[in-house]
Each structure stands twice: as C-alpha cells, then as structure tokens.
Length: 159
Image (cartoon, helix red, strand yellow):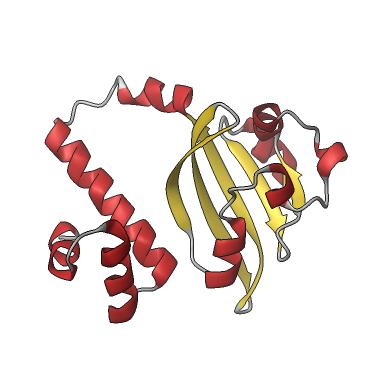
C-alpha cells in the first residue's frame, strides 16, 4: 500500500510542507479546496497561497496548532497543523483541513448539550494557545493573557 493512495483516500485536505514552509505535497481534496494542482505550486511557500497560514508558527515553535477556525477567500474551514520531527529536528509540517460542510455533517449527529460542547471548545482553544506559547508557567500566563482570562480560569477550564 502506497502513502499516496492513503492520502487520497482521506476525505479531509492534507498538506505537507518542508522545513522552509514550502509545499511538498497535497491530496486532491486540498487541491480542490485551494484551486490549484500540486504540479503548479510545488515548492511554493504556503504563505504565498494562504497568507494567514500558521505553518511558519508550527515550524518556529515546534508545536502543533489544532482546530484553527479560518475564513479566507470566502472559505470557512478548520485547520490543524502538526510538526514532523525526526531525530529531534523539525523537517516539515502536515496540515489537515476540514471544511465547515464536513463539520456540519458530523455536528448534526452530536447529541451532547451546548454546555458540554462549549466546555470542550474552551478546552481545545486553551490547549491550542498553550501549544503555541509553551507548557511552562510563562507559556500558560501568555495563553491566559491572549485569551483574556485569568491563569486560575485557565487551570480550571483544563480540568
């Protein structure tokens, strides 16, 4: 089984960038989403096509950023970006993109209360900020400040 066939079987957009943030690969779902073929944009910096991309942040901080809600070029979607680390060195990123349409399919099946869903969303946003700023006390203070909550609230919402 080839990795390429696996990437194309997945119903979410997959983007792989190198350690410089240049496009190495994307599956056909991601290509349809951005309106390009891989042969046209291979080796192009992702920020040239998606100016608000968080790929440079993931490369810099060596931490994933998950469930980023984006609205770009009249497209609303979630993106999660993960560093690819080999022998302690970040050699690129892999991004998963899910359109709002794909989310709506799953949400209609969600039976959790609004309170439960809101708590989970808050926790994911806090974890995303902690991943961005670091899992240290200073990182958590920065995350709390960015989110406009106290450090105590941050800890309570992570329970």
